[in-house]
Length: 116
Length: 109
Image (tube, rainbow over the protein chains, first blue to last red):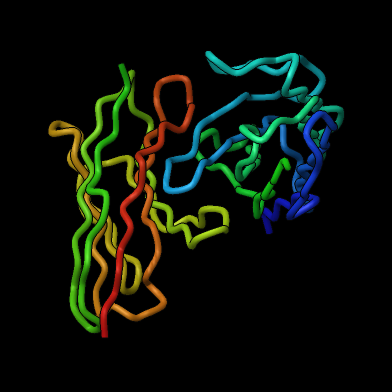
């Protein structure tokens, strides 16, 4: 149980285009989902926290207009990188949490974004 | 500020034991996690400590001292597949996961 999927697993796009990454909880309802970014040999950096049906809470330094997050249902959250640039190339990971245990986060497999 | 420190890299020999240390300073504490991460993959859960003491799970054990802001992950009978990064993370008072930079563990035959 507690499986989280991400799609796509890898994406290569041209500079200036937008990319959407989906995060789904497959066998549980995720009241909260988190989006992380990880650069090579660096730790995970929390970008934003999203609760179903409400606006995402962005961490300091993360541009909300560039990284659009939508948590439309209890099983789906999307991250859209708008007008992507090479510096946005990174590993994006989502995680999901239920109301039953605030301490436990279930991670998706990650999405490798490369912007040319 | 919130800070988690762990060594950048460690090397150990197959079959041996290695201890990876983690110290933390966070705004509140609701538990400490250890995750394993292979290159290009998402973290996978290894252990969770919220009370002081040692939690043993097979070849892996994790220890916590809340008064010292200290934890370690102990890996026994090392196997080549244990070569990975090991991430220490703390849940703060807002239930946010604060991450360490990870310790790259290199296993040599």
